[in-house]
Image (cartoon, rainbow, N blue to C red):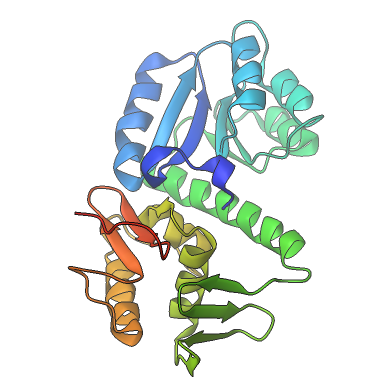
Length: 247
């Protein structure tokens, strides 16, 4: 995920455009513990302005909106932005769903959705966006160097102080994601989205297990790390060589 899609402390920025304030509060309360920063707008024209200016990882968009309906908003948005959009539709409104997909919506949900289904769909559209961005940027992937680490995406190899590292595919992808964002926090949710091949349950702690294994292979001490720092309440960060450790 690109830096522009990350809010401070490594949280992933989402925009909800919906005039149902109760639903927006419910979604914000549900999504925030997963590492999302949720901004909300209740008017179509204001929603379009926010979508164009806010650098969001994804947008959840209702069709029935005051000021500018969701279909017209999406049509305007697609002239300038390919930010992933999940549209919310009333149950049975098939013409609206078809129109939204034809205009450029990435997915849709009826308003009877469950929060778990929304989270799964949200992760899927963001992951597809990340993969597409990587395919563009990795046409000629450049090696990444952090301190004594050297990671070469072209050959899918990594070395530490000129010593080859034996990493699992998940460990390699995680190390590369952290190294490419050295100095910036990656939340667990962001790491899941960037490296996961499956959806994860709400309290899946596999990221922590992989980080622990990766630290062992790097010879890292979690209390005084050379490479991977734990940032309390936020996630993990690859240290820059000249940075001070997190307390």
